[in-house]
Image (cartoon, rainbow, N blue to C red; front, side, top):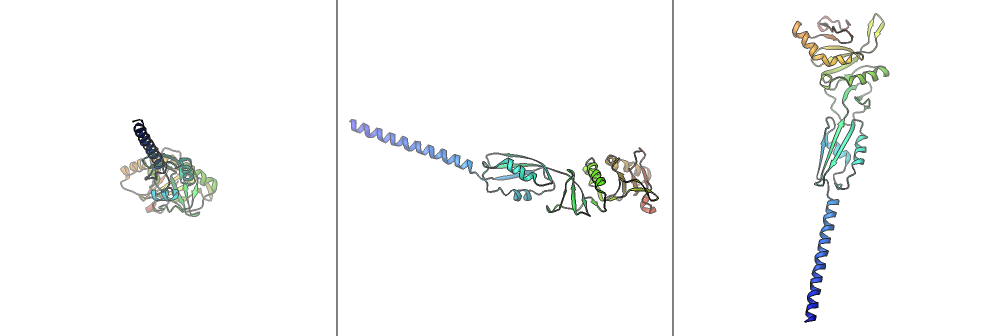
Length: 249
């Protein structure tokens, strides 16, 4: 009887050991699965210029474990792209990696240097294959200090207004051969008008649509030159396109 009881206890002990080993195996397998769970989805948010596919291919982390993803390293790698100003990264253990990007604004394309000028002051080559069509283009030479000032001041212009500019030309105003304003630029608008603006009064350009609407209400649907390069509240406008006179400021 005692021998039979011992055999039963041994069997029970064996079963307990088997169950314990199975539980340990399942726990280890579960932890291993979580640690090595691959990235299921990469969501890219906030990007306007850079394509999702470019960012995902650039990072090259599709086969990495979501658990092992180093957010700090990803952020540092993305910030190495001049167009990116800031990055926020979140991950969950369902395998979803969210990358929220803040890009610098593109101000214009410098045709002489073949550089894209950004709102953060950086100039980049177009090796990112960004779409240049519709981007304002600076067509002539500008001294570095004036160009830097113009670039900085242009960040104060609303993007919706800036997107209406097709060409930018450095065009100092003169009396005879004497330059009286070396900070003036000529902007060719997509709506057919020309705007003269200087860096001192550049924020007046934000009122372009309202100012032009007032001109149309008085003169009809006329196209011409609008001079916003004066601190005066009276903005001069003339029908320069038909008269052939483009500088009356």
